[in-house]
Image 1 (cartoon, rainbow, N blue to C red):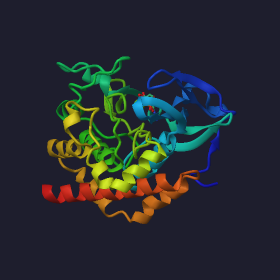
Image 2 (image 1 turned 180 degrees about the vertical axis):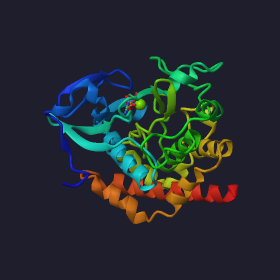
Image 3 (image 1 turned 90 degrees about the horizontal axis):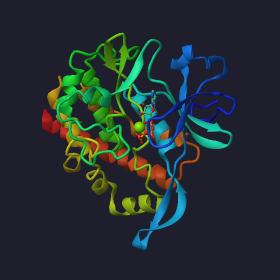
Image 4 (image 1 turned 180 degrees about the horizontal axis):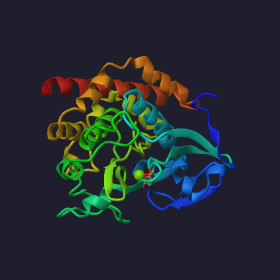
Length: 314
Ligand SMILES: Nc1ncnc2c1ncn2[C@@H]1O[C@H](COP(=O)(O)OP(=O)(O)OP(=O)(O)O)[C@@H](O)[C@H]1O
Ligand SMILES: [Mg+2]
C-alpha cells in the first residue's frame, strides 16, 4: 500500500466533534483506540471542500471540487522532506466521502491550546476565535509571538525538540512562504501544555496552500500570465497589517527577531532536488495536470524567492 492510498475510515467510530475551524468536523479513531485515553491516536477527518465558480456580475456558477484535502497531504509530505514537524496526514474516505485525516499533534499527556488563547493576554490583541473574524489581525505579529515563545522548546519527540520554539515557528513561516499558505492565523498554530509546561506544537492545517481554493480555470489563467507574478502577491493577511506584507516578508521578520537558526530550512529547501517534490505531487492519484503543473511551478518560483532573499540577508 502506498502512503498516498486512501485509508478507508468508514468503520472508525467518531470519537469527538471538533468545533474549531470552518465547518463542523469530527475526530475519529481506529475502533481499538476510540477510548478518550487514546486521544493522542485520534485523527481529525476533514472532508473535501467545494467552491462555486463566479460568473460575470458576481453571479455564482457551477460547483467545483477544491483541492484543500490534497494540498494538506502534499504539504505534510513537503514539511517532512525538510525536517519540519507537521501533523501526519493521510488521504481518507468515509462512507464514500473523500477527504484527509490529520493526526492529533498533542501527544499523550499534552493539551493543544491555540496561539490565540495565549495572545489574548497581550495588550491590544484582537481575538480571532469569533464568528466575525477581524479583517486586520491586530496583535498577531512576530514581535508578540516571539515574546510568547521565548524560553520554550520545540515540539516533543521531533528532530527539533531541543530547538528554541521561536526558531521552529520561523521554520513554519518559511514553509508557508514556500507553499503559499495564506491561512496561518492564531488558531492554526498552537502550544502544547502539560501541567503548566508549554512548548510549540507541530504545524497543522495547511489546506489553504498552493492556491487550493482556485478553480482549474483560474489556475490556467495564472499559469498563462506566469506564476512568479502571482506568487509575489501571496500576502500574509492573517497577520497584523498583513495586507501590506508578503508571506516572505513575515518569514524574514521572524528570521531577524530570532537566532536565525531557521535559515537551515531555507537551505534545505534550496538543496532539494525538484524530483523529490514531484514525487509527492505524483503520489496524489487524482491530481489534474493543471494542478500538478501549477504546484510544481509555484514551489520552484517560491524556492527561488526564498533563496534569493536569503543571499541578500547574508
Ligand atoms: N492535527 C491536529 N491536531 C490537533 N488539533 C488539530 C489538528 N488539526 C486541526 N486541529 C484543531 O481543529 C481545529 C479545526 O481544524 P482545521 O484548522 O484544520 O480546520 P479548518 O476548517 O481548515 O480551519 P480554518 O479554515 O478556520 O483555519 C483547529 O483550529 C485545531 O484546533
Ligand atoms: Mg484551521
